[in-house]
Length: 238
Image (tube, rainbow, N blue to C red; front, side):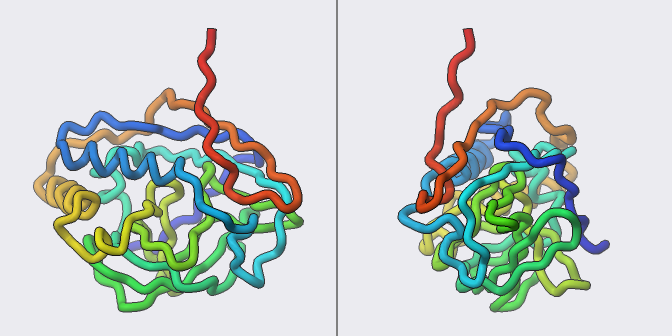
């Protein structure tokens, strides 16, 4: 497989777009997409702006750059098709930060669980596009920093040259429980496995990103505020 490609974000903005649902026809696929959206919108507890992962630089503001995906990753079949490795894992610790473009990236040590696509070792480095620079947390598409101790369903692309796995923003870091993470028959894992099997069987899937998506606005936190900001539902338009 070719090395994973770093997504070049557009100039920074505090507004982001976020698909909240998909039109999958399978019950399990619909369930896992719902979990994907709920995880992306849920609160993250009493933590500091940079999630307490020293030595990450302190942040007092949040800057969000659009994630201009050419594929609709809210369709789990696309997510499974456009990634090299999908697995469950527990974030153990901050592992470092490295920028390969104008956008910061942050690495975490992860203990893996169930492997759904590709083979990974018991401990891997997961790379998240986003990080703190000059006092601002820079997020790609509103993707939230990974939480130490939390289990996730990771959808990633391998970067052999770096020795890590870069997750897909928003849809590639779904929070799940440890019980779900260790049980291949749990709804999130079963839906992902079913989507992967559909792809292997050549089932049709959508290829383009949705043209219209709900808009979410994340307030800029002040010093001492918690990150990420609480979910603010879209306001009705007249």
